[in-house]
Image (cartoon, rainbow, N blue to C red; front, side, top):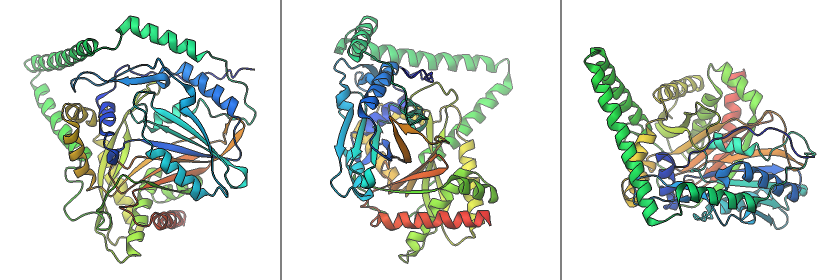
Length: 484
């Protein structure tokens, strides 16, 4: 019987947004890799034939998963997505077995190596790796997807296509991927022409002219209203002031004061190391409520406390730390791709009562979040950055990232146990991009647990396992205080 569950709609734009194009461009510097992924721990290997059929059906229904990136001319317009005429499902689904004994450390080291293996930029930008041979007969599924395809929320929506609420799922609908791809290629060619230099030049010119005309039209229309409504000019000026504050919060103007941050984490590299930890979602929610804040306040405060503990153990005092958190700007759940903006934050790290630190961090996060409107100013900044040489952009990005200690992200997952082609999902650990910071801690809720992926630059953080232990202890202590 075919799986009759209705797929939730996702709509994707043909052309990358400026922010997506920026992530596509800066990836040329591995030090700034903007991508992340997920490692799902399973109680057993899934039925690989069922899983392949499920992914084939998903690729058939989500064109973005069978599209590749085609660049415009120069930097005057973002790249576009076009069907990959050589789409090969086997390229995107890999199987591998761990050598005995198949420990968690072996698994996490393999995941870090998979992450560092660059994408083939001529193909669709996603990969599955099914890893067997875990201790106790378990398995793991690693999914990495380029950030230009989707952000964390968008990737979570795509993951719904292969996650099932039952251990014996029905057979996916049969699809002829070769025929679907051929039809998509033919339709694209008839509507947009064959990829060529001339076509790229024309598309770039048309996009640039249309964008410039739109900006000019909106500006003239706004100015024409000022005579009839004198207060409108004042409101426009106030809007500019808000924009300046928003840009300052997002690009870090003042977010990393001189002498702030960790003196231990000055070096950076492109090496990556993965650790994982988990906490009870119910206890975390109760603690956040008891402390008078949100789950995200609990999450970020716990990171800060763990970092302080790591430094205290080495006799290194801190005054403040420089971090970032992600603000979703998604207003339409059917929109695919990316809808977020990062917000940079300086947080107190000196001696302070735990409740006071929790309140201070929560308030600073709320102020930053309130200054993000629309799609966030990062979209506008990305449009400017995309006109500059990649070496200049990556150089500036490296200088900014070097002032940041770590990044965080908090994602919402399923509340009930799930399965992948007959295998039960035991744990779900997301891992986010470092993009030049010392580490990224990303958490996702799943079936009463908060799974956290601690993705570390081991040149910056010399002992990732000890940092993990301090983070786990900090969350336990913060939970105990909030539930006392």
